Length: 544
Image (cartoon, rainbow, N blue to C red; front, top):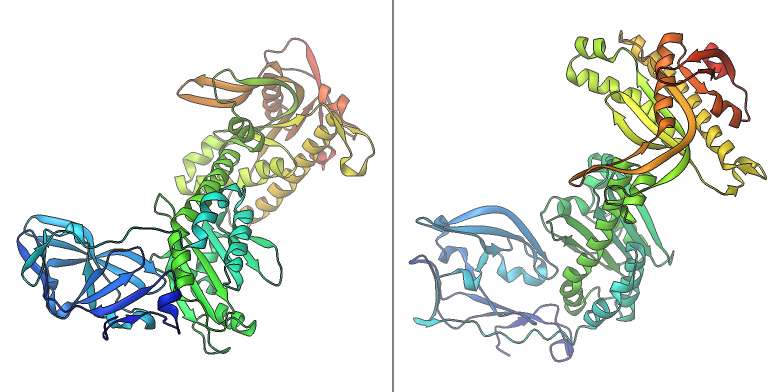
């Protein structure tokens, strides 16, 4: 080994024993690199960084580089040995190559020699010279990862984990089998969800099992997030590596917590998905000397594969979330289970709910679009929210109307403390509970609206029970899951009668005969397009 060479994190016998090494030494040659006919870098003070299973890399002092040809970019990457890398593009004449230069402006202590130095992607430059002799390829050892005990695990066992929680548990178990003495690990994955910004999976030695935490979008504005290593990672600045100091001397509060538990070393690394989404993994150990270069090298090598496994599971969750959000829970599950062709569907028995906002046209004409959108969503929060909270399924938002169902299964259970309650009775009860919840929510909203001089929300709800066809309609390129049948049409006619009778909630006689609670008759009425008169009912609260 050259006297000028230094092995990062070198311990007695480390260079001989370790499978993963990183070393820095001074080159004894003058190195030049050319781009589009121009010498971009020319130096006899080059550092050579050698890393296991990677070609040696030349690092040039900035003083020996034509920095006027370099353009800073927003790209950042992270290395657990060297720190966070910044990138530059190279432009000479009309020739531009993006992100082919990098440097560690604030490298970790273990690699402090390369501060003020930058490197170039070998194959992106036009030519390289060593002592005026052109060289065409770097020497490169084979990428044999047999010495990495995590590689075989990630290829043969990790994929068996069916959930992110299980994958996290298996990974931390394997790290500890390799002697890393992990005491805490967290995997934070950003989500495509209307309410949740991220999901975190955390393993702690003291708890043994993996806990799942769901973070709302408010987390990004909180002091907890701003004072955590996650912010720079999610912002694309790279990762964080810190030796843990005594309590009160650490940069981040989480490190003080870990210090109190006896941790010695901490690393937080970005974990990128194939679409560029940046997630994070953090690992803390209480090994007396912290993480070795070999430890971090092994983790760093398998992280791209591990991130793909997390990505597959995240995409599955996102698909289910989007289906549930935009189609409803029951409908989304049917689509995910394969009911995707036009005509796919089933016959079902259900309570049909149709609610409509009153006076929407004049309201839309007197309000700005933004104001009316807020007003409309206040109506939906009260009405549709009550349906979902009571086990209903929103099928469609039709302008300012809500079409929903309370499905009736063909079995029995023991909800609400009753020993034997039919699904029909339970569906009716859920629907009535939704009516009561909607009326209460809208009443509270109206108090707020009236206090600010805005018009109160008025609405109509019509409910019926009957047989439906529940399935896909439309054209092959654009389908919609909905309900079809005379029962759905009759529910619409009942809801329309709420205007004529000035009663906000009207219920069919079929529903009333199945419901075991008390309803109030409003008499016999002719429904448009329906033969014969129908007795309609309402809830007691309609007259209060």
